[in-house]
Length: 169
Image 1: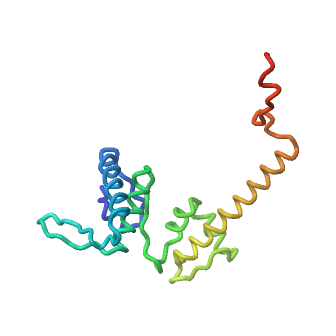
Image 2 (image 1 turned 90 degrees about the horizontal axis):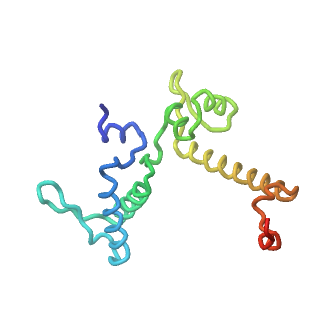
Image 3 (image 1 turned 90 degrees about the vertical axis):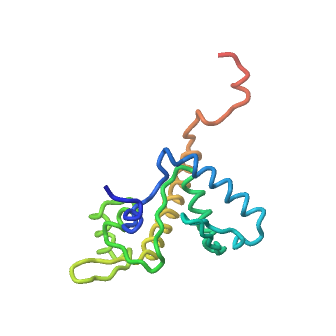
């Protein structure tokens, strides 16, 4: 069975186990309170298993706070170093598409990549830029479809007519 550390190294999403959720929620409250009270989070420290204390830099504090916020909502998170290169399978997983579909995107030059021998490698920044662009395009199309539907009288059941609500059926 893969350990959490191995999952993180493989860039697999990590979420809190059901038995850990109350601890994550408690940690979130502590970090939220610390962020409000302490002007500089660097006054916070971690205590190690042998009782040693380590000052927590502001950047680490706020990153930890974001990770805990996401996990407390029940979502999984993946930490990926900037500049990291992904395999086609990792990129496909990140985009939630099949590897074959991702390869077609690469062949169509929609996402930059480089070859290492017979393998393709993608920069995380390029994959995330594509994901952001794709999500924006999808939202614009959905907004347009919703507008067209309203324009042509779709979803009448969602429109409230105060006069019809007061009439007995």
